[in-house]
Amino acid sequence: MASKLDQLKHFTTVVADTGDLDAITRLQPVDATTNPSLLLKAASLPGYAALLDHAVADCQGDLGLACDRFAVAVGGEILKVIPGRISTEVDARLSFDTAATLRRAERLVELYDQAGIGRDRILIKIASTWEGIRAAEQLERAGVQTNLTLLFSFAQAAACADAGIFLISPFVGRIYDWYKKAEGRDFVGAQDPGVQSVTRIYNYFKANDYATVVMGASFRNLGQIEQLAGCDRLTISPDLLQQLAEDSGTLTRQLSPGNPGEARQSVAEAQFRWAMNEDAMATEKLAEGIRLFARDQEKLEALLAAKR
Image 1 (cartoon, rainbow, N blue to C red):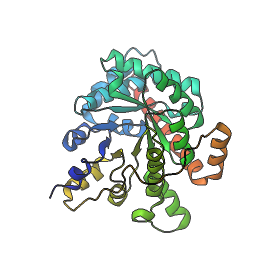
Image 2: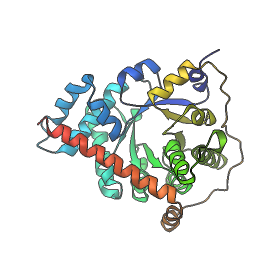
Image 3: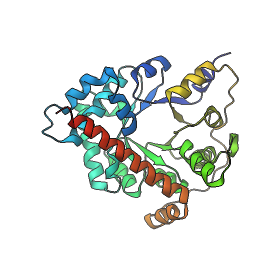
Image 4: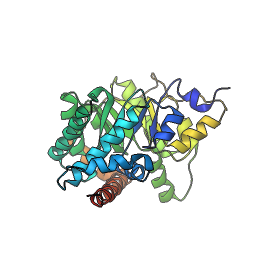
């Protein structure tokens, strides 16, 4: 019997949620994703020491530029060992500034271009705020494809589909965390609120012929992954990928096109903001996620500052 990881690869594109080259090489995903937290972890790995030094050189004290250069350097190394794409994230502190998000995204694209890496190998990650979605919409029209992250609500997903976003990353595990704490109980299988959220989004996109790719993210256990087998893509940590590789049980496809989905709906700004206001989980987890990524971005800047 093939491993569950090999079985999963038959109907879902597997993405590694890490900057660890050894893990990526060993587990052989198609794509990989990074974020400020993962880049901070990568910065502590001996193999990236030279990249840190290079990133800060000739930056004239611009630590934002140094961080972008390090992110692109890590992305370039990862692209050497995967056949697909790397997702690189815009500074989370810009999540409520459309123009600033656009400028940073364009700089990341330019840095990749200078490294000889084309747009077909990268996705620009942006937080799924209203302002972030608007920036991503403009990037998509300019031929730069995006990955909208920190996505917790149906309203965020519907707005991204309206905007023609290439890919969204709904966060399964963080939704699960919120409801587990709020209700004081555990959730398993199809009853998991994170699983239910991604299933609803997937069925809605397929029923209405949206081209936007659904990539489940932020997993806490194998059960969540197994319940979403068949989702377009799943981005999974090395630990969980290894567990899948070591499990030879049968994996059944759960998601596929053709299931019933809700009617197409357009989400204007007022509707988006009201839906988020009414969804305490999504509002709290989005704000928390932005804060956590911002703190790790600051830690990475401090690390680079120490190398000047």
